[in-house]
Image (cartoon, rainbow, N blue to C red; front, side, top):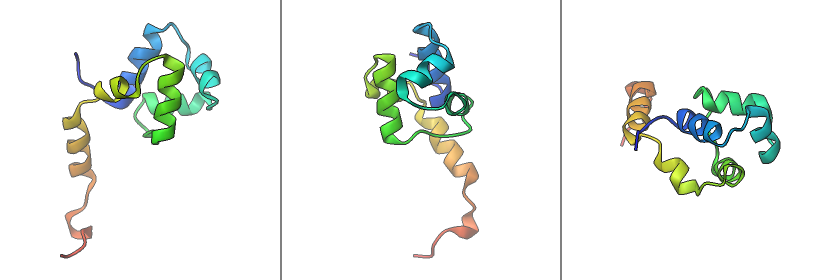
Amino acid sequence: MIKRTFGKALRVVRKSRNLTQLKLAKRCELDRTFISLLERDLRQPTLPTIFKLSAALNIPPSSLIGMVDPDYILNKRTKTQDPSSQDPV
């Protein structure tokens, strides 16, 4: 299985189900622009949103999350954190 960002995984599954962003959004009761933001990795979903998306796509949440590369998440977090802003121990 190819590892990727959440947005890329969402897009792959959505397209494999022959759904447009609008159709997926309607199934999830979300805005189409939010689906677009998720797919472009400009927003990250909450847990309830992941459950809505997975139900609409007929895929277990664990499978959808399992498509995400953990190294991407860790690298992104490391790059965005400012070491000077960390709380002293």
